[in-house]
Length: 430
Image (cartoon, rainbow, N blue to C red; front, side, top):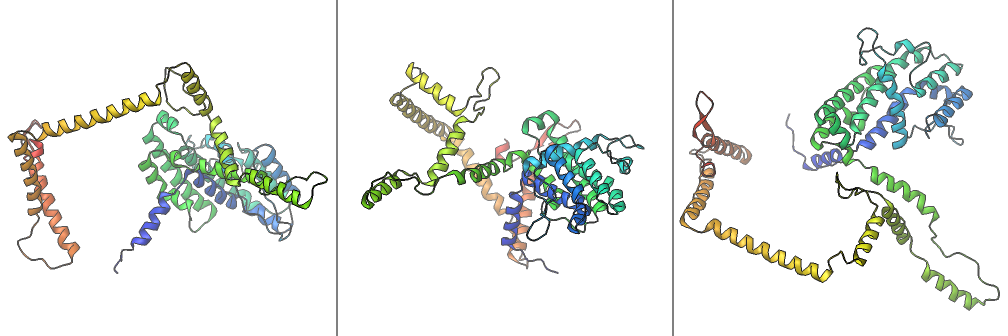
């Protein structure tokens, strides 16, 4: 079997991996988990039963956990809406589920042993508001939920692993420095992979898709590569989209208002044109609204331990205006003069450095030796005989020969005390 390279497919895969977002990973996996957890209760509702139990379950989610999530039915199609959570819902569920991670295993005394939540199978007294409400809803639904109640502890353990993994994935740079970046990366990988295994065993799922697969295969690698996934999260974009959806219905798209009494049709037309000229386009309204919000935002522009620099952009501009009035700011003309002098001195220093580098016979000889060494590097890869094969095969053999000769010259010779006594024959090593 021959594998043919597909640059387009590889590029598309890279783009998919490069757009992984910690925020979307938490939301999408949380929705996937909710589908499996609430499967039995949703089946009961779809068949026309358990209405009161589900209503109480939804009230708990709304009143105590402040979630928009709930089990609801489309009035027209009589189909249940799929779970849909935003970033705040996912965070609140994660915080609630983390309470179960502190339950130790009865046999091992740890919080990672399998079966440690079995003690709540009958009572339903889980250390989690969500799981207590779910257990109560299953019991009060009036249907036979024995198998579903038996599966709840294993599903809850898998949800604990998911919550732990997301807690580490969503840590800020400051929190990661406090706990240690390497320890955070290792803990996330352990919990993420334990979650995928536990969820597969508890929920009888065949495969993982999208972010469920990324938690197993790609997220641990990218977390270590990028250092902090929260820095590449799309929270800012999601927040802007949410604000835009609230802002657009309030923007006047057309001219509004009544006309004064007694105006003729021509006068009304003139007034209409005047109002159209004064009406700002929607894009300008959106820009002004976001600009006003950015003016009020508080950001630590220049982190400092000795000075308080956490001013909003509006406060910074006000301070600049006050400094201008007091004469504490350099004028634009004076600043330009300083800047031109800086550019001129930088160029002069650069010319002088290059002149000092190449002047004299010694410097010129060293430059020629470096150039000759570079030429010799490629000569050593030439082959004394013809080797059949593709261009890639011959080029690979030549590259290996060049690297071998290069490393033989660059390698240091050491004595028994591990001190360098020879070798390192390359020009730049002298």
